[in-house]
Image 1 (cartoon, rainbow, N blue to C red):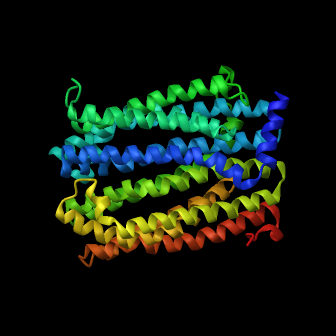
Image 2 (spheres, one colour):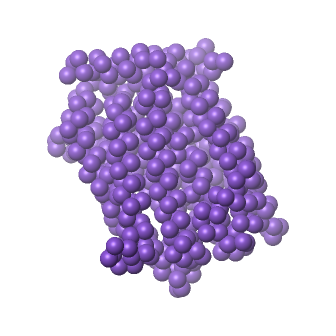
Image 3 (cartoon, rainbow, N blue to C red):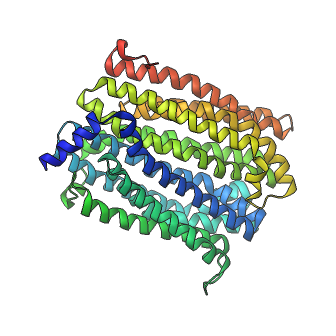
Length: 461
């Protein structure tokens, strides 16, 4: 055990930083690209089944799915950061305890969505789609299934984070990729009724999703028990421990709230855009699917940065923390530039994948060209958020997220919508991202300064 942990220290504390970051992040990025791809494939198949109501149902479901992922990932952030820090401090008993508490927390998260799926789905859908019709029916079916059967995604996420925190990113990629691939295979079979399966339409897309998540969760548990020798999963560590849970939640809850504001934002935007037309609502939904394919790799980089910074912060390696920040910002900005170019040059091609009508193409072409320049600013904000979380300043990330999506974006979109011009509404996105960028830089510098002193706050050139 000692030799294994010495190897772990050598890797996280002494390995050449670009090689370390990319060895951890690239498998996560690949798996997240697959994750984004199967979400896109899900929407493409549903659009072929029923373009208007089907696509609209997935758009209405998006805030719920986003909230679910926010809770699962946010709770696991505390597990990830504290586990890496404990390993850096050679406190292996606490690392094992944190792993068990991570499973307990995420199972509690599942219970929340089980209750919401049973009792709150119809009321939620009625606020956006009315209380009857195909759009209402499809939305209720999809949301009920993904909530009631969400145990898979909660267990899957904590398994991934345990593997990532101990430097086993290839195994983490296997967990996430397996669920995505299963979903891609099952989607057309269940939606269209291929290979003798009954045609289930939008509900089939939801069933395919939860099956993929449950299989991934089972694989994640197996890989952690069999191959993750840095921690030991023992039943006694699953019993809730108040002090440890409070410490984990102090890091995780701001992350949950930071990501959850995205659900509130999309819910409000749905209401604003559906007042123009169903096509405007669907363009927004399609944009978020396409945008996820751009942002997921940066979030993968984010996930790679957190354990590196947490470990080196715990070990007292100041320069490695500072250099990791610089490397992350440069890499994220470069990738976002690529995404910007694709959105600017090929907007109609991207929208065409979703069986977009002529009116959707017209609306979407304008929307994608207006929103995509904000990608460059967003890349810096995502990496800054990771640094703040890893240094124990998650509340800074929460402030930035709330300011961008609720304080700026929604009021700006609403005020611009009063002019009756849909094009003006899309301008709210770059306006909000500019505010986020300024705040992110301020809090990034402040976090480094608080962690290591003023002479370390600057980013290396």
